[in-house]
Image 1 (cartoon, one colour):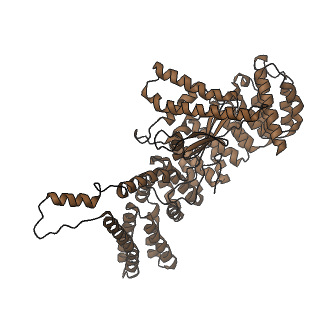
Image 2 (tube, helix red, strand yellow; image 1 turned 30 degrees about the vertical axis):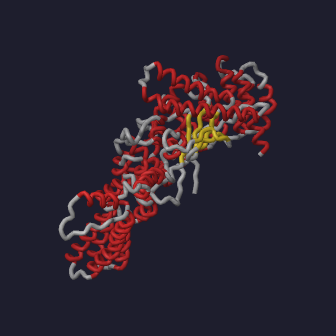
Image 3 (cartoon, helix red, strand yellow; image 1 turned 120 degrees about the vertical axis):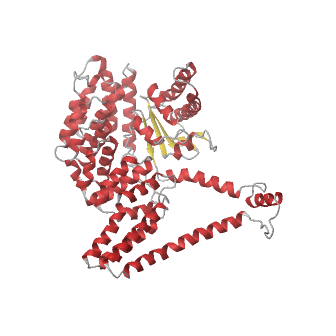
Length: 591
């Protein structure tokens, strides 16, 4: 099952290891079509050529920028050259939208980067961390590109960072760089290289490296102990022995479960019954510590069956105590350690484990969420909370009082995963949080859930000191879609000071307004093309460009005559955006 990145990360439910839907990295991608030209094939070739040059420049800079400090002339010149090559592409299109595979990067159907190597393979580097597409918009600033280069130049393994590439990209909150993520095979990808290395080390060794040969060579150099005859051991012998030992371990677990419950059934007194329950709890703890969660789940399932048949109050109380151990602080902590490890936990096993948890485990998973170091582990905790949080929504909401902003944000993300309208009662407080990233998450959820008063709470953030918060508020209003939400956006666009924004900063508000696709919005945008006296002359052309951008998104052919007139404008911004809008409307008509 695949879902687009606008709402969550992509999930592959056939994955063998634990990977969960992401609710963290939600990026609003702005789609801008290429500039209308007469010779489209020629332009397409030029686009591919410049995209290829841009990627080669990024790859070169990625290898070299870390060698010099930021004030070094070589660093500064390389940064300028990279930015020049990247922005040269935007002479042909407003957006460079790249799709990423394991060993190649494509612009549309054209391969603009290809490599089979393991090192310095930009495609593999991005693909391994879950990126499936990368979009760079024409509003890109040099500082923004340098921040992006800094993120992709980091050696996350060697430098021992807690965060990964995706988290670092997300925290930068780029305005002109967006991406789509599919982390369904992210853990598998990382593990696969280690597993392959192990197999190659074992199977691909030559005779001099062979373990049996090494043993034999060593034996020849030493005097043979009296009464001991050395035996040659091959790699195959060692593998068989390893499998036999592993099989022996696995075969004993079902027997262990049967013995434990036979002891439970055979208890002669309640004191003995309690003692057996303690033994069973210790067995569960042992299984989890040794990464055998499946056996622990089997024990809990058997305990549930016994509980359903037991009528003695004291016995029921002890069985409930055993089941509560599934979400205890100690067991939750151990689960967290495995979630944070490279090996992880099998997805289906973890899902079954979460299904048996009760509401009492909610605070322990909130505490776990605060201490997990990997994004995969945090996603697991969010998934668990989204399941057990439905059983006690108020207990989950108490996590909003946590002093750590990232815990609060992830509780809001969990609210979004649950999709319960009760979350709206808690958002007015959260949307005033001191951390912008928390406010943005709450605004997004307001947009998803709507509800009475949602517009009032969202509208005030259209005038935030943080521009990224304003943009998220505009997007939330467009999702709410009510008349009052539309009015709030128009008021923002016509407000004093709005025209002081850069062109790239104004566009998201027009894009949000264009989603309403109603006649009064269409008429409002058309009036702006008639040199409406709303704004000063110095910004009039940029405002007109934004209006044409929105008209192109609406796609109404009624705008074509006026847009064709605007193409004759002497102002390059106006004529360019008129051409883009016309092309977009024509594409809609063809469909």
